Image: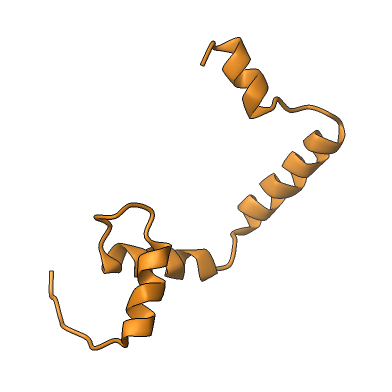
Length: 73
């Protein structure tokens, strides 16, 4: 793996810190997660979202609280 050093402003560093999912996450991980979030969804994923929304409208789902009750969490 090649590494390089970049200069960023203190403001940007603070914003990147806000995006961390956990305190020891690297800035590289934060940047990759951000890039992934901006990529277009695949056609298959779009179809799955449409199907999931139809199931919700039909009431074909279970809530997190119901799952917790079912499995005694």
